Image (cartoon, rainbow, N blue to C red; front, side, top):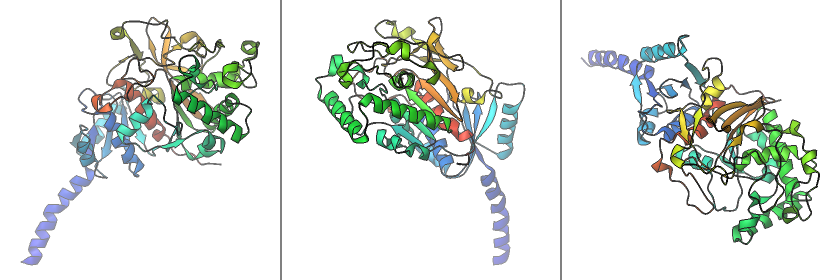
Length: 422
């Protein structure tokens, strides 16, 4: 009697276990998703733990499909991430539909999560950083590094690097005119000058330029760079001004070279060319790459930028970077608010721009074996984020389209197989 019961129980349980093993979960990323930002964290951590997933480009806002492993259902529900469960055959049918030649969709395998570093100072600064806010809210781990680690060669330990709100020209964000008497500004200058001296540089500007060149080599060797706000245009300005003193006396103790503009080398930049640098220490701009907020004062309710649509099957990278549940995203300011279109190199892929205003908001390019993505503006959910404003609470913005673009950038490297290091 006992043996017979055991056989019957085994017969009943076996189909159930098989069904569970083949069960899949779809995390929709269209308007039905309750928490878009946490959804990225669920998938990122799923593949970080050694499992795989698929990114269904242009399907329900760029949805994710994964086999039910690693307790993904419970983890999603704890984070208020909407999901749908389905059988293996239903999942296969969705993939077949997505891969059909008749639709602009594609299924991309996510295989290995990138190791993330954020370039950010040790000392507290009176502004937040949208990327660290997004990573923390999505529960994605990252390391902090700064100039010493970069110059020591530590970038090789990471697959993906974000440049914090930064000034790679060594002019301290050109905050001198308004904030030179503030304790945080004085502390920043003292720290940077001490570091430059310790590292053997003649000035902070020369140190920052070497950091920029090191990051450029990192990209060339296969790294993925993502930068926002002034970490975008000042990076290229630093590259173009190699060997040229562009820092006024207020920043490095000696005047800028009067022929600095003519000495710029645009062949060394990544994204921008033919720009004019601004040498006035009292002007809150580094060059004419940026669309100045002082000039571009428009109705906030009318300020949007449009994401371009790409071929999911033929251009998967720009498609991944623009996945969203909306096609137009609210604009937002920063020290670098948007890029003048005529300063963007023709080799660059424009991902998003403001129609009718010749302003590029979001761009992507290749350099060597790696890529870079520049996203203008400071905080997608704080239109005019200013120094000393409180950090944005992403609990209030779980479906932010602007923050989704940031998190697209941490996932797309996972679609590439790990390269052998030589």
